[in-house]
Image (cartoon, rainbow, N blue to C red; front, side, top):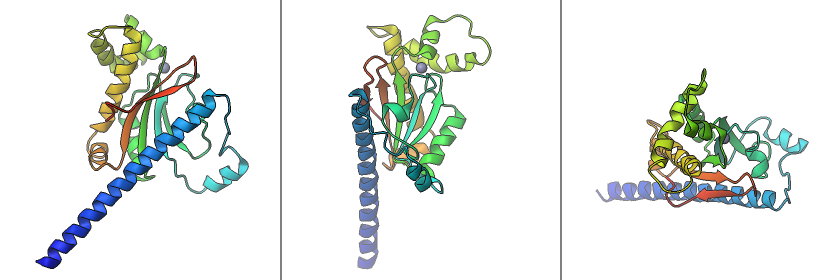
Length: 218
Ligand SMILES: [Zn+2]
């Protein structure tokens, strides 16, 4: 009986320590992104990990420290605005930084196989995809699929005071963070076990600063 209890305590301690290690790792990933963005904003990028040596280092295996889901907008390249290099970020880009099953599968691969501890949903100021949804009207071709994904955020933003486009952009980021955090069967469990953190962030096109939404993050 005593041995059984002892084993249980050890298992519990290991589980707690593992969760703690992952949590620290997610926080240190956020710090790397914050520090890199600061260098970019101050126009002092180090362009680290962009050398031939780095290319050779990671040629046979990658260990990125963050997943970044961001907009396809040509003004929002994550490696540049976080001053990172080859093998640092696992990036998924779609207009409006939304995810479908293929996007979710890509995130699952990153967290399960590559052990990435942090998932960032990065929206941005004056996003064209969100703006098109705000303006409404008939969306041609497959653009319909984008708009129908973002419209829920716009509808909710209409109930709030302030700038409709800006509120819709923030709501869309929150919605995607929630969608990822509640995605079954893999991501929800990883969040629950504190193996990953999923956070939203907004990029300012004018000054280059990324603001992380740490409170209210999932
Ligand atoms: Zn955009």
